[in-house]
Length: 511
Image 1 (cartoon, one colour):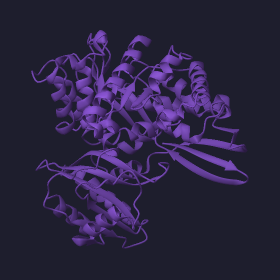
Image 2 (image 1 turned 90 degrees about the vertical axis):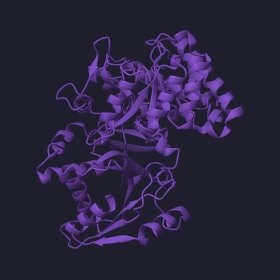
Image 3 (image 1 turned 135 degrees about the horizontal axis):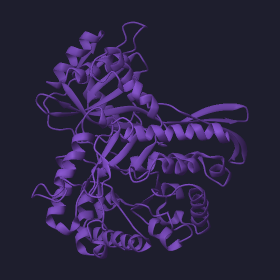
Image 4 (image 1 turned 180 degrees about the vertical axis):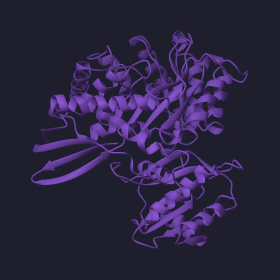
């Protein structure tokens, strides 16, 4: 997590920003590129993020841009950067460390990659694809799911599926299977490696995009050259027209990300227009160094001078994602892109903290299914909640709740499939979270919300109500939806004062 300390007019405040790498791979490619274990020492994705963090720190020491003066809204402003671990995962790792059993080393490891909070991973053109008759990438998608939907990877990785649209109905079915069965949250398409680059505008990719929209899954396209970028742009327009006529309610759920669009295309306004259209985004993988700084200035200037805000009511920074393309590009490239999103030049030339927040993670987070569709609670007869009340000043209610979850994990009674963060109305502050918990014995899932009713003193752990759109804004006690959620949570609740009581309560709820 990136933290900005802002000093203006003698006053100081801080802003925390979630950082997400929107483009990396998992598996083994036919070309030899490999990433089989994100936790592998030295070569894993997590250590790669740690290397990026180390390079940024070293760069700050060399060039002094950890802290600098700029102007914000015409006011002289000092910005100072720092890295801080994400609060929930950091506290959870601390509890696991104290237990001294399984996963007790996560705290020590995580301090080296506290900067990048999460990362999107999807299959290569894997050597083990085509192992199942259902779809070309079924085995690859299973591999990604196995990593991204189990602890501890589930707290750091966002899994995307892959399919080949030229498989027709098989590809459409694979999108559905990836979301509904494998729990993957987006889709990767690669026209060049699968040799349908001349068929981008054909009907088969459109059918895949429509199926992805049904599940509100973002779709990222690999590109090589401006020709494929422009073809994907036309495909987006065709899909948008199809949905507007046949399925207008799905239009907000069409989300296409065009990868690598900026590298080699700085000043190409036809490419810029391909990105700046409804339902479309671009990732910045491959862009690095001075070119990154030039791109931000040129793209921002073009956007504002041509009033492109009118296209989709999004600002320029709401169209683009920070992305590494690891392991094809290394930590030196990831750092030399990141540098130009947080340096003095970015702000002196017109960038804002909101722009940095958007590019580094917020845009990626907002396109995920969980932030566009109500979270649906799996069928369960148990609607009971646990209310943990602080019994002493030594241990907070929040820590007691985390201790219980940690013990359930360590004792192999539960697994964590994913977690989501609740934001406030402005999407710049976050507080409570939801966990998708799996009973390790019965394999049943339960969506649980962790809500601090009174900071450090009263923690509510409650199943989400059916169809509650919990995660787009912060909990407000007088909001009708939240009142209904709280009323349901309090209707059948176990009060726990001690860790033992909380543990017994959670075991009952999960049974």
